[in-house]
Structures are given as C-alpha cells and as structure tokens.
Amino acid sequence: MTCPAYRRATFVAVPEISRFFGIVVVMYYDDHPPPHFHVRYGEHRAILEIESAVMLFGELPPRVLGMVVEWATAHRAELDANWSCARVQAPLTPIPPLE
Image 1 (cartoon, rainbow, N blue to C red):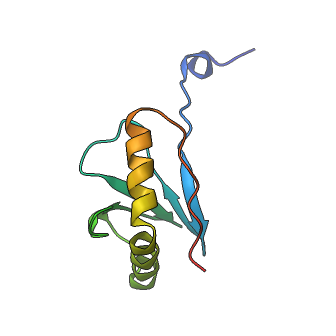
Image 2 (cartoon, one colour):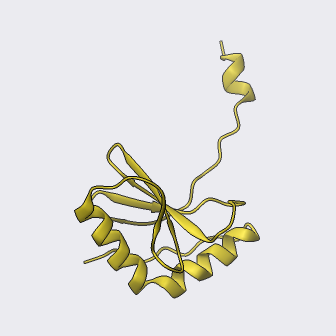
C-alpha cells in the first residue's frame, strides 16, 4: 500500500555547490533577489549575499561565519556564475571547498 501523501509529494533536488568542515552551501533554483546562497551547519541556517558576503538572514557561529565569508570572497565569480545558471534552471557547478 502506498501512502496517498507520498504519491502527491513533489521532491525538488537542492543543488549543493560546496561542502567543507561540516558546512553545506546550496543554491536554490528560482530563488529571490538579491543574489545569494544558503548555508547549513548543524542546526544553524543562514543566507549570505554573494556580492558582499554579508549575512542577510539566519545565524551561524562566529567561526563558521568567518570561514564561509572567506570561502565566498575567494569564489565570488563562481557564485555569480551559479546564480545566473540557477535563474535559467541550468546545472550548477560545484565550487571547491575551503581548505
């Protein structure tokens, strides 16, 4: 027997673009401006703007935020390119992790 709710559910893949030190960076298709990316770290969630690497929403531990800002600053061009791809539903390119 199949659960009726399961049959109706639509599952949307969330493109993971990088992962490092327990930090997961994703970008959603058809997301709202300004250009940004989403970060998960344990129970913490945040949204950071691509251009400035400023946190728009959420909360991250200070050390994690520092690593994400360092990573985003180093990969701004790649984040911009992925944002453009996401706007047209094109595949996103993985970005190397912070080392």
